[in-house]
Image 1 (cartoon, protein in one colour):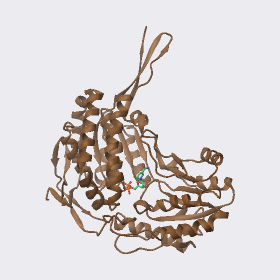
Image 2 (image 1 turned 135 degrees about the horizontal axis):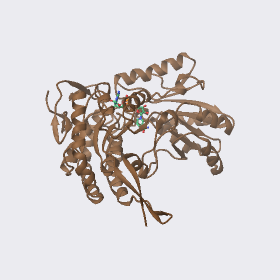
Image 3 (image 1 turned 90 degrees about the vertical axis):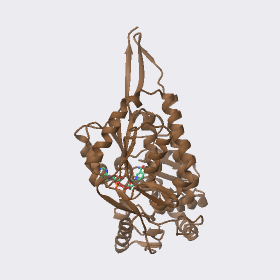
Image 4 (image 1 turned 180 degrees about the horizontal axis):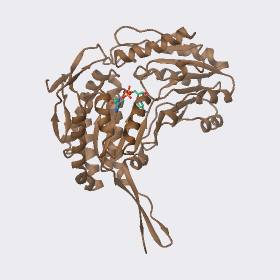
Length: 479
Ligand code: NAD
């Protein structure tokens, strides 16, 4: 296999990164670009062998990295952020080519956020303290001790952003890491390994293994030397990982799917509500947090739909490298097939496509809004992970809350209302890790992030990340 491929003008090493060295597997898998289906290259296809080598490297590097001062770890993480910023344009073009999300978002939003992930957790680490307190003259002192090697497994919809949201706090906490990116978007994780090495991160502190989750996953998640597993992805994979980790009782953080509602009340600013609604087509709907179920108060449903159709009709779909494009392709032919299957079954069950409802050639799917859908139907209950939204109406606040909470998920919810008291009342009753009131996707890294029910287990962000990635210890000292 060739060891480096060129994407745009960027050279990307397609081998694993283990113990500070590039390591090839005997077998490879082929990485395609969703933009045109073209072959990007052959990627090392990891097995239990590489999983064991990567965990061994992480274990060997752990004592020295855990013993570094907080200030030293923060310094190295800031140097990684500098490296990300220096190579921002390269990361943006490689990510867009690999996963099909918009280049303009990668340039202006996502990659700056990747750098911020490192800076934020480096700085947060330095402020992390718990006030000592006394018990009958004895002092209680809480410390966040590094836990050990962490396995971090990530999906393809926002590859480097989701990876670094885990890598940064895990490293800041003094842990070592084995990162396994998704097989549909393996490239930027490899660039991150280069950047981290250039920034002075010692060998073995960050390891990156490539491959199919079904082939390398179990060996990583059942490994007795792994102290934490953080996973972002689908519910079925989460179940598999939980089973695999159960032998060692390895602590898990699970960030999973969603079927989040957008509640539009009659007292809402309808232009704002429509803006929020159209935003749900971002990344071709391949966003875990997307508010894919519109729940609109009956009295404004017709007007909301009219304005939504008008605004959605102005979206441009096409090559994600083009600055004018609003919606790119779906990630993979299999994902496209899955999306189309959901829509065909919904239409067969009586749904009506207000817009879209069909493929558009290549891996592109038309932005779709379905109405006349039953609450217990598959299209309302299951995550599609594509540009497919549904619209239902309600007539009372009570009914709105009931419909909003009536799925097995609980990741997020968005409200459009002009009534603050209503917002408070409704929010208090919603089952969701994040609720946005008259806004969407505003995320501060110090806030807790995660889902309820099948949307996840645990919270990350700010101190919550350190609570997860550390062995939190209380030391009681006699007077
Ligand atoms: P997926 O579960 O198919 O794959 C995710 C990762 O798990 C990949 O790296 C894959 O290789 C790996 N994997 C697969 N089988 C494995 C196994 N047996 N052991 C270990 N690892 C294994 O998910 P996906 O299709 O890549 O991602 C889409 C899903 O991710 C959606 O459900 C979406 O909602 C969810 N998601 C959630 C969040 C969040 O923060 N809550 C963010 C983004 C995406």
